[in-house]
Figure 1 (spheres, rainbow, N blue to C red):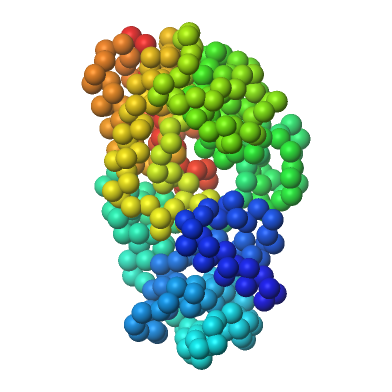
Figure 2: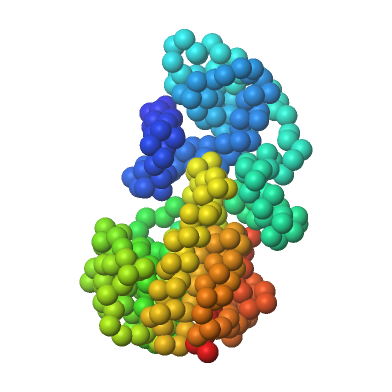
Amino acid sequence: MNNERQRALDLLLRIERESAYASLLLTNDSGFVRTLVLGVLRWRSRLDFVIDAFAKGTIEPEVRDTLRLGALQLLFLHVAPHAAVGETVQLAPLRARGFVNAILRRISKGAPEPDDLATRTAHPQWLIDRWTRSYGAERAAKIAEANQELSFPDVMTDSRPADATASELVPGMWKLTGSSADVGGIVLDEGSGVIADIAAKAGDDVLDLAAAPGGKSLVMRTRGARVVSNDISITRLRPLIGRSDTLIVSDGRQPPFARRFRVVLLDAPCSATGTIRKNPELKWRLAESDLASFASLQRELLSSALDLASETVIYSTCSLEPEENDAVVDDVLRTRNDFVRGDVAKLVHANVAKWVENGVLRLTPESGADGFTAQVLLAS
């Protein structure tokens, strides 16, 4: 078991040092390694709050990650204290083992409880403040709490996988209740499935302008749409090889198309603050100042999407932030009069419609899906 703890520590250090993504590094790891790594990333600031209550001064990164692993096992995984402490101490550098042992033993006897929402739910304060302004205090708390829940893959497949429940948001999709083996079908989050369904409902001739990794293109095909899948990254389009109607590799800001499409889906690159449940490291990697750079790219892509659509553009992001959603649409429509806002509610069924506010889809993580914002723009 300590080999798994050592592997988890090595991955945590690598994620921090290289800004690597946990989901890509954990592909072949055991359930316990995944639990440790994702648990530390999910609860990092809460773990630090407890550690710092007992340890004063600067702690070097390797020792802090070791303490986080031990504290996670004691506070959230209910590992027997003798095992959580003893096994974790062995991971620490020799010079720090006495220190790690003392801190973890004190934590095992009782840890302080934080009063504020940001620390209690292990989120940066700036994110909590933003969501409170955008959604109100009650919904902001629900978003943060939902981000701390365990997350498993969703899959669209003809037959029900073992240990799965039917999605209430996307017909034909199943929500897995554990980290299962390959179940076939189309693996994507429910929120992505909702966006694909909106685009397919808008029309059967669709350009997926920023298609990678391709799940939405595949879902739209199952709904009967003819789909051209475009992305700037040939590597990220590989999952679509042999599974898509047409694959194009181009910069969506300067695409090579000589014709218009009835529908253009732009699920734009973004800060991904709606996906924190599946990608908890985003909380500690993203800065509020990053949002402006995302918005600049989004405006360019949306202008391109409007030029390529004859009837409808679906603009979506997996961000919850207004700068990447409403503000982007406002800025682009201010410069042209050939498109107007429509109502997403006309393109969704009842279970999704309850997440539509004033014509805009605002699907937030307490829905059980990744958070997505989506707007429909109609040729005027």
